[in-house]
Image (cartoon, rainbow over all chains, first blue to last red; front, side, top):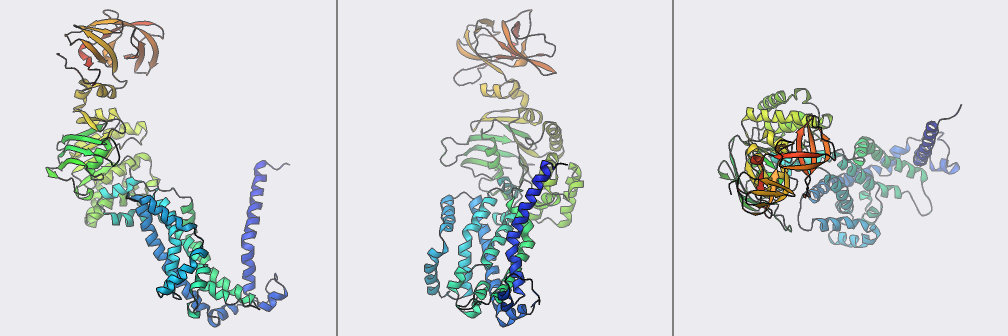
Amino acid sequence: MRLSGDALLRGLVLLVLALYTAFAAGPFLWVATMSVRTTTEISLDHYAWPEIWHWEKFPQAWFNSNYSVYFENSLLVVLAAVAILTVVGSMAAHCFARYRFRLNRLLYFVIFSAIIFPPQITIIALFQILVQYKLYNSLLGLTAVYVAVQLPLTVYILESFFARIPSDLFDAARMDGYPEWQIFWKVSLPIAAPAIATTVILNTILLWNEFLYAVVLITDEAKRTLPLGIQRFMGDQLEDVGMIATGLMIAIVPVVLIYAFFSEKLIQGMTAGAVK
Amino acid sequence: MATVALDGLSKRYPGAAQPAVDAVSLTIAHGEFFVLLGPSGCGKSTTLRMIAGLESISSGKLEIDGRRVNEVPAKDRDIAMVFQSYALYPHMTVFDNLAFGLRRRAVPRAEIDRRVGAVAETLGLAELLARKPHALSGGQRQRVALGRAIVRDPKVFLFDEPLSNLDAALRVGMRGELAKLHRRLEATMIYVTHDQVEAMTMGDRICIMNGGRVVQTGAPLEVYRAPADTFVAAFLGSPPTNLLPAQIAGSVLSLGEARVTLPRRAAAGEVVFGIRPEDIRLDGAAPHARAEVVAVEPLGAETILRLRLPGVATEVLVRAARTVPAKPGEQVPLAFDLEAAYLFEPASGRRLARDS
């Protein structure tokens, strides 16, 4: 008996996939087990399977450690920022892709080139601006910063997708009697749905996990977002590893949910070109 | 039904040296099937898009039913257009594609259902109304695109090379269907194509464009039989008209080494002698010239011969019977049907009047 080349290749591919899955899911599972163990238990054996499942840590984090507030803040900021990003980003992308106007490419380049600055370069200036405009230490200010930070990438992804929609479709809609605004809503947006889903997921996950801007721009306990809440368990001398893990699990659940909900669209968007 | 009148219509793109459309004047009658024919880049599609309102008009006047519509936006011109790419909305079903234009015009729902149903019935789309465009064949998509225009019952139909994405067999079928549709609707239709067969078979009149200008307008056979210049002569007809450099002295035409006596006297000098491949016979009785066979192309119904006339650089194409026994390298006798031949002025390419 000899293994055929195909079976061998298949086995190899499966092995690589299994290794990668272990690499990606391993830490996640590890944190998941720690989230139901206490810090004392964890310090005795880092990798042990939970003997007693401390589910009570979740309500404890939620109610006693203020996680309900952090969660609400995160939800508010991320939902608002993603909503604004999606609407403004898709409109901007539509214009850049569809209309010929002076400086079209230059403006597009300027917006896109904002991506090259690492946040550390702009954050002090940003801090001062927000203080001057009384937006420092406010969720509104953080939302505005998130929109500004993610807009270039959003426009970039959407523009390349909108540009691939054949212009005949817009002409057909114009012949069918629709004004530009309606063409955007009834033709561009539905066709670009996969790309829009991609940006929604991307922005949601990035902003949900965002730490740097939040830690600089928010100080109030009542205005902390989830990443800041998790940071609260990291003391100078002592780290409550068990509660950090519980907090992480609370923070991860929505990301997993949104990904599961949108992933099909995301894959469609990535393999896009289904415009024909 | 409507008339469409173009008066000195021009389109200049910023930065372009030549206008894309240069002072085109045409009048298209009620219920006429009018074909704009020309090679790619001749300005025919731009002309159509100006009529549609998709392209702004640089200068000149466009009238529909006697009303100037230069500045009227596309949506208010009551024109429907069928695109080469079909331009079906990929996210909508066939029904929604057909109903999209009606919904904008606030047609009542029951009326939309009735009209879409009727059009779907005529075009054989009734079974496909719930499908999306990606689940349709090329021919079906083409019919949806057509239906989307018909269902609106517009004043004028515009077609931008609607058949060029179909395979050959479907194209022949759709040509017939379009002609039938035109008879049934009695609508004004303007049809852009680079395919002379479509133009010849469907058009009431055809307008041949080149380099942004109108070269000739007329009924298909009229244009075929009396081309205005060498461009039209070469463009219409397959294989194209032979255009051979020649000299005239008195009534004798020198075609390389051959001497042909013309039925009428013509002004002496250099000319281009134009003769269609079907107007040359292989005739030993009274030959005008003898030529060497370069290649034989049997097409089944007929045979195309490529010949070389002594002293003429251009090859001569002859459409001969399918049974022609010629072989490459042989000498064959040629007789020209001089009544069907044309003389063109070499510099401008214009046809010289027959009786000059």
